[in-house]
Amino acid sequence: MDKEIHEFLLKHLNGIMTNDIASYHETTSEDLTLYEWWVTPHRLDGLPFHEFMMYSNAERGAVFGAEQTGKTRFDLSNLLIQRYGETAIASYTLLISTATGSGVQVAAHNESRVMVKMKGKPALSGVEGWKVVHVHKSPAYSAPHTG
Image (cartoon, rainbow, N blue to C red; front, side, top):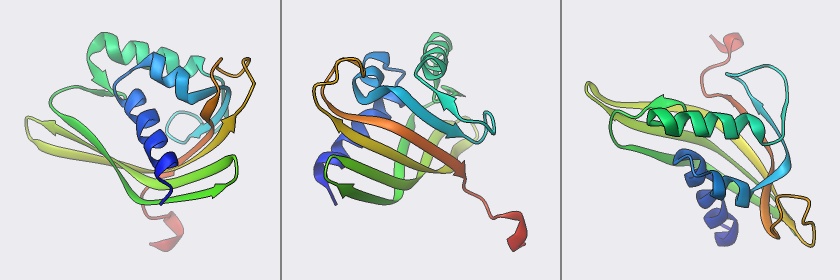
């Protein structure tokens, strides 16, 4: 396991989970592209979509789009990090566990995040270092053709 990438990934995801806009900007490229299957079947570009979501979540006490009713944590199941010089790919199943009045609820989806080590590119989020440049999410349930 690549410790540098793993620590960066955890920082990036923790920023998202806690609605920390500054951390999100520090770890995400301004030219981010992403696919979020539950939002739209089309690619989303840039940071404004998530900025709006994170500000809105923070205002109503929500974490990652869910109402905050108790403690929330995330785990990366089957994490695989592939590093190729200044580019890295992390793929995993994201498990989000939330304590509710009726017990713990767990949501899951598959993710891949592509990270690039930026050097001397102040136009891309203004800070050198690792940045997430692409995210692809897909549902973590059995495909219709298997059942």
